[in-house]
Length: 274
Length: 348
Image (cartoon, helix red, strand yellow):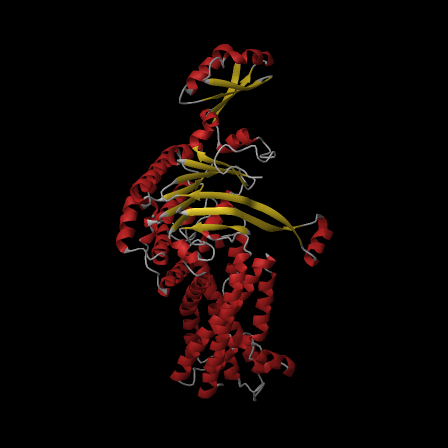
């Protein structure tokens, strides 16, 4: 048994950053894809600008409590965030379906963290290189409003990160279900739920009362609605702090839930193809 | 105490069953039915530290499933696995730090990125000390020719280059236990022999335990001291290679196509002594088996051409699959307990 005693000590959590680095390198490996994505984001933001300018044309008042500038800021930033928050395709379900999960599981790494840091790498990189400059540009030309204060901006950054964690947790939970369903249908269900209830498309105030109450009760609003409302200044300091706590609580809860489900899922794992 | 202990190990997969046609597909949406497929069926064996074991059997025998159970990637349906005193599934992370693994059919390299990125990642994930990392890379240099592809994206590598990189990646953290699922697939003869030499050296110098699945008889002959053979999920042979020598001996098959069917009648003349055996003389086709170490291929061909009107010929090396078939018959171990040749042979 001597051969087994001279191991390397238990590695620290920072080692997962290697997955983040690899994810960034992967984005860079396909330059054309990267630029297409960047152009797509800016185009999407521009479309939102014209769409919402048209909606507010001839309205001197507010719609659903939103003035033109606040609504524009909300939807355009929402568009910029989608590049950050939205993972490409369904990498998790794909790993299960094509069996490449077997490679990850043969390594001394916690799978939930592997997938998390991997997602974060690609998302953060795309956001920093596309979403942020585009947002600066839109602010400079006066299409959107700057955040009310530096403090609000910093709180927004934290809130957006928690939004990412929430979205990831949902994604992971639904992805795990493909262990049992062996298909990708549930991911579409998740995508629909997220785009409807998270406030990614319009501020939740624009919804009819019934739908709005539902969206406010569900945890999806932590993904877009809360960070965006902090950015526009709709949530004051006290409310923003409450929002962060709410987001963090859900993020931790969902993360733990995913962990329990993951434990069960590994027992029934079937690996396809050799 | 043995390093690896496998006892009554069984893995049953639930495979979704589809009825044919549209109605069947629609029905399976509402009420999916499953079929239980037993991939590994009550296997027992133990492996001591420092052994080099060939784990062989035909396609679909359950080799890869066993490897995944040993790695802890899959959970056994029943029975138990212990590797260095750990249950590899329940303590997957701890177990993973001391194993190296090459899957024959899937890559652990980062597909879109240069080879070096995989090594950077593995170095971090396994927390390989800088000195070990450098030493290993230098050590791998000649065998795996890793320098030449260091900056090349994995997707652009040839199969041979990729397999060498896979091996280097599996060994970069100096694991004391190495599972290799078809490690020499797609390599040329020179590269294969270098890798075998490397594995032997690693075993001698570091006492690395190696478990190898393969189709290539030479891998087994040159690397392994012991073989474990499974067929249809059950263990059919466990013991020294010599136990199968009779079959292994006939390493080459020569298939002759004759000008006229009558030639078959004189075919036995070619197989006059023990060196060449006549397997089949069937009209225009004659099959001979011989041991390359006792008689050279040109000699056999010359002998055959001297007495037979040979029009064409095919020379091929016996692979493990046909060895298993020869030993246990085409449809396996139907009469259950007739295979007690090695220790721990098939149990009722």
